[in-house]
Image 1 (spheres, helix red, strand yellow):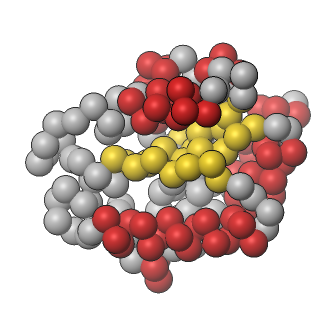
Image 2: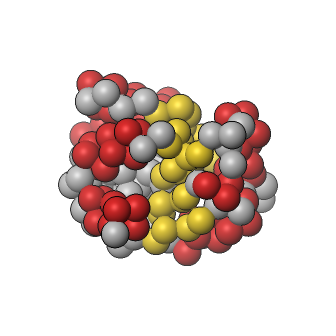
Length: 162
């Protein structure tokens, strides 16, 4: 079975800063250490999968196309640096508008990836900056790693290298 690193998007991969919802191309900036950290995880044999809530869609603040444009910018940057993201799963719902099973702290999107890519949850991790990320990871049987919003992601490597 495969092992994976699941990653939240805003605040972990890209700077959230004062934009609670990052959906405009000009607001996309990678956090410090993201490229180096993802390259190391890939070298360690981890699949890389993004799991992100994008409730701004349900609230009418942006469209699926806006979110997919941001994902395209991230994927281009990762590809140019030799990083393969297996998939970006996102939940377009928001509890204030509609209930769903895919929004974190729900674990449906993680479970979908576990099944699709043959991932062993016992050998996998979820890196997020909110308690809802940690709750989703625990529900799916994946080890949660909480980081501070917009922190240098290289600090996470200590968990793997000591």
